[in-house]
Length: 173
Image: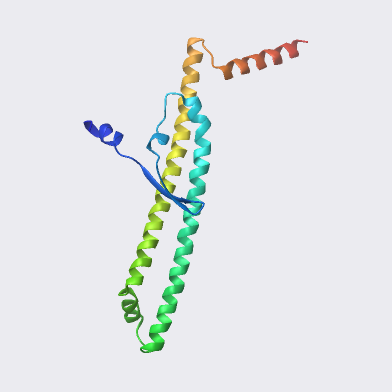
């Protein structure tokens, strides 16, 4: 392993777990989040990456909500069963204690926590791609400024220069 903070990060994957078309998936996004040498290629991909991970985040958020609704329904059913079976005047804290002692409570609670963690990681990855997009925009602007300062041009700036020359020629006529 390399020395220093960057060296440690270089060897650590950034795992994202998600469900796609009913199938559980796990992807390391570390290389996708890094800005490569060809920023033009990176600029072409970053919007699609944001769309993909934004969609996964929305799906994960919906899944968390579904699980919470199912949990609340289960808990209400358990509360009703306990009150009916034991004592309708049982204090709420005793009912909660009886429910939370069950293995099913732990399973449901842990499943929701895991789904929330996956959702939060997807949101963080989406936000990281948004930061990457901003950095690419800034880096592109700096490269254009450097090229302008040296008198060089990019294919896009040559196109703009030709358009401007045509506009000026039309105005003279």
